[in-house]
Amino acid sequence: MAIFPQGSAKKDSSLPFGKDPAPPAREPTPAAAAFEPAEAPFQTASRPAQAQAPQARESVIASDLTIEGKISGSGHVRIAGRFKGDVNVEGDLTIDGGARLNGGVRAKRVTVAGELEGNIESAERVELQPSAVLVGDVKAGTLTVASGSRIRGHVECGWDGDAPQGKGKDDKPRDKDKAGLDVVA
Image (cartoon, rainbow, N blue to C red; front, side):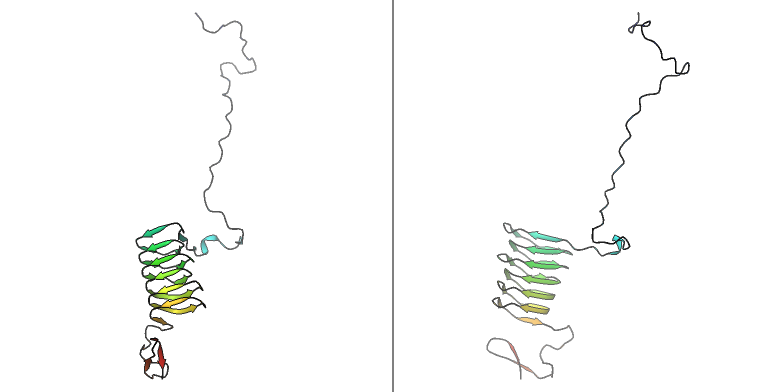
């Protein structure tokens, strides 16, 4: 008993005897995609992308967040909300207007537009925007203070590690005035 009718189907006579017809052709498989970063449009073809130093990324604490802890790393940090704890980064720290940081700071560059209650230690550059409020000591290479900002604390800027801190340029002893500022006699 045959399942398929044998006599009604004709065989293709163009095929060589004894060979089965070739299976139907499959569609070609798509090529695998390369997931390497594309070159930026401003890079020229003569400069390879690997020769450029990678840019540090910025981590953001959003304005609607309040976080307590410790931040450390090599990237940049922007605080737009509230943070309580120490910040120790090799990159830049930015405290946006309306933001608040309670804790010590160690960063390459520090820009304050909000409030900082804590000490800034060993920064190359500190910039206080007009809306900045800083309560704490500052030790930096360069300090820029905008009109309208407020500071309460001890400031040391422009000193390298070997300079004597008790005398002025001409090695005269300094006196303190009533506001706590150094006065060279």
